[in-house]
Length: 222
Image (cartoon, rainbow, N blue to C red; front, top):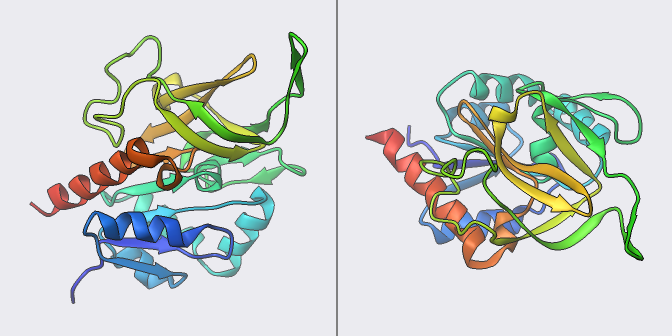
């Protein structure tokens, strides 16, 4: 049976068209699906998401998608999380109460504080463009990852009220600062890469993420 290059998980909380279009632009075959079997047989998986953490976890459980995602994480299949999809990969979230996540990356999800700095109020959610940078202690961190070739300081598009806090700094792929809060805007752990921003809505630099994703899928076939 021919394997689809990418399974984009549809659990009712994601901007799937833009992600599908970005993958197809890179020449990848795509299946948008909530079928557990389709998730585990694809060459790669994307977990998107917008909205509330608790609602998303309930939807994944209702559709029996939790076990397939854990199976993918235990394999060598590339798994990419986007926006809420990154947060769901972590252990827990405080958004609208305490919620258990997928637990695929050790760490938690917490709210941005309300910040007023020099007369400016940093609104929550953060909506709009912000920059991403390699971790200060590891400027070469992006080599061989989905951010390879992306310019340090590149502008990416964000929409979120919460951010991830990994248990280990080694999980941080990129960082972003909002007001006085420096947070992990990208994560890299085993076969999982995840971003708080939307690469598919971030212009040329964002599309470079999908180009690298396509290369990763094709190299895994070799």
